Figure 1 (cartoon, rainbow, N blue to C red):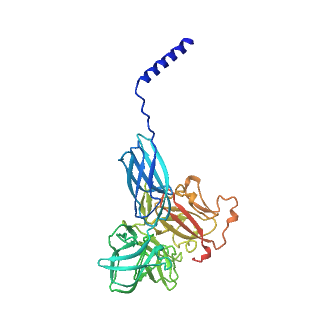
Figure 2: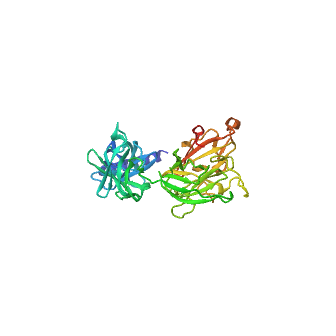
Figure 3: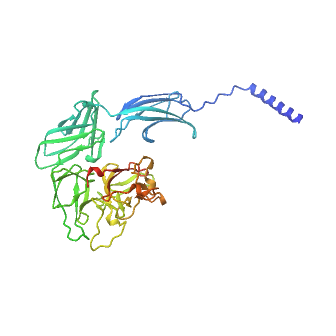
Amino acid sequence: MRKIHSFIFAASAALLSVVSCQEPVEEVKSLEIAAYTIAESAEFGDKVDFTVTSEVAQNVTVAIVKDGKQFASATVREAQEGVFAGSLDIPYQKNIEDGQYDVMVMAMGAGTDRAEKTLKIALAHPTFTSVDFVAGSDRFALSSSDAASPLEAYTWSYVGKLPAALSGYFEAKTADGSVYSFGGSNVDNIEFGNTTAVALYNYESEILEGTITFDVKSFQVKYPLEAMWVEVPETTDPAYPGTADVEFKKGQVVSFAGLGNLWVDIDFFDNNGDGTYTFRAEGGLYRLTNQADWGSLRIERLSATTGDLGTFTWDEMGNITSNEAIWCLGNYNFGKPDKRAVRDGRLFSDWETFDGYCMAKIDDYKYQITLRVYNYASLKFFQTKLNWGDIYSANYDTANSTFENCYLISTAGSDGNIQQGQGLTDPNKFEYPSTGVVLRFTFDVTDPLGIKATVEDITDQNVM
């Protein structure tokens, strides 16, 4: 044992002797973010400069994140004495919210080495002093809708004489002279920074007094729409209801000829109380059905590209591939304006795809349907009407969804059923009155793999 210890000691002494004769070993620097500079606040549409000091980093990325999703980033791969300098474009997007956003600063070294810092930046919409609609050489000046705080308002309007045909884009200015543009292929596709002329209308004669409205947050455009007359198709045999395909624009005022006592779907139309209705869903081609046995005028979205029934689909990465319609199927304990009736001369059963209801697309990523629901109702939402394209329960973001106590998403087999009373400790506690209740379902499908659903009891609003 002593000999072994002596050998180890001797070897160690020899090694120390060798090392002492060599040059000092250079210290290996670790990857870290030593310093950074970036603004604490900015406006949407701005360009923000930044610097990040990290001596051994190979590149640096700065990203802005909101609710876990990155919506802006910039990567710098060249440094001057360890300082990476760059700039970040702050997007100005439709319906984007003011508030605090996370700034992720990431320095990447060799291999998988990385260092991170998390900062905060306050982002807000620009404060506009003027908004114009630019139509060639003509300009129509819009005024703020908020007389008390005009610079803080999102909605701007022009009221006055308008030409028979009008197309153009919106131009907004700030106090420092910065100019922002909003244009696009049509009113449903307005983009920031775009000066493409939007064709609003083309009528036979000029408008003596019309209104143009633009919302700088939602990018929603309102303009004069001529009243539209629609002939309700006749139904002589309930087994074969009459249909008609009609092109509607959002905000279109509609008068129905031959409507009789048919109820008009409130998810798609607002009742103006004077015999006319205003179309409230996304513009496009729709199929009207005289559903006399249900006592209603049904409306269903058609695909703009194929003319078939609209769909809502996405790929395996969660990217939406079609975004026009979501369908509701189920048993016969719900319906609009009441429970579905039995059609004479036609066999039927629960969960018949022919009887699926179309949800109304009321915004880019928002769908709505209002139903009268009775005890023991069971329903489910589908990507297509006729082919059983499920939206499974796994696609609901249950942590951020709100369902009435009497409604559950069935988790058995992840089948996505929404049921009344079943599975509760005391189902009788949630029994509906004999007239049922009116529930409004709203889906936020921004992330199709995490749909945020809301069920609201609106029985007291007397909409059905």
